[in-house]
Image (cartoon, rainbow, N blue to C red; front, top):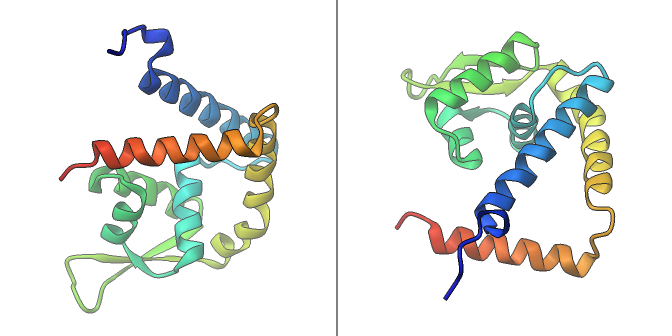
Length: 146
């Protein structure tokens, strides 16, 4: 049987790691005069993979609900990285696409994030990293809604 100790609880440690990674990435972005959030970075990344997606597609790929995605898209649009246009096939939805400025961030942001991850993973072997990823995927599968 698993003995509960909050300081050793996997979910608690995952949350601590996530918050720490986010805070440090925000700081890194600011050092480069980039005013975006870690989640906005994820949305840009998904758009670099496939431009011109509906908000629902982006929500699905990033596991965010519609209202949260709306706020993220609003922020990215305000910064000039993306644009919204009415979906001609389904006028109830919008197509989200990259602007030239949003596309240009593909050269700037990944090196910053890669440096951030290298610093965060100092002392972690490749084998340990693979085990961690495998464990997290198993946890996701075990807790996925069915």
